Image (cartoon, rainbow, N blue to C red; front, side, top):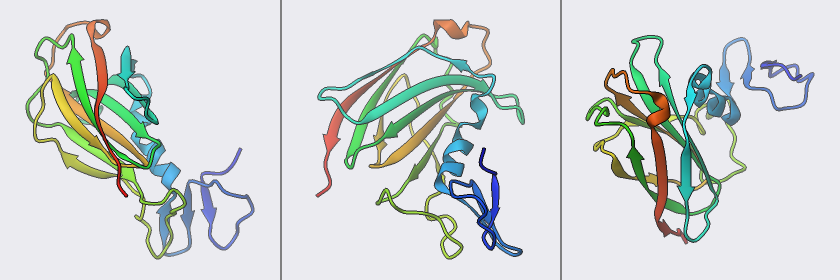
Length: 181
């Protein structure tokens, strides 16, 4: 098992190490930030979700519901990985929520880079790191843009309801595929 931390002056293990440090600097490697996105997945409820693509695209997706331990708010989280070199616009269709989505408090967090060989360093410790923005429109049908070579996490704040998690279903359908040249 590789260690979590590695001193930049003593690379006893070959990468991957999640956090690189010296006596005065520190940075997380890209996979550290990806793992950071999945930290709420423990004790979350995995939802049935489908990803419909026509034509097939290099995407994978999952959906969970989870409760933020800090403020006790409940969220629906969708994580989508775009393995391809093209921007993809998804149409997300959510059913079974019975209007329990709040119109505010939704966020989109993206980890991406223009080149799959990019890394973080002491000179640029956040070259590849999460960028969180607020979502403007929250509804049961919405479009989300996925950048090339990215992982995108979408958190939708839910009203405190008693409906069963098993009643939720999530459908994600690719609407458009735009290629950068």
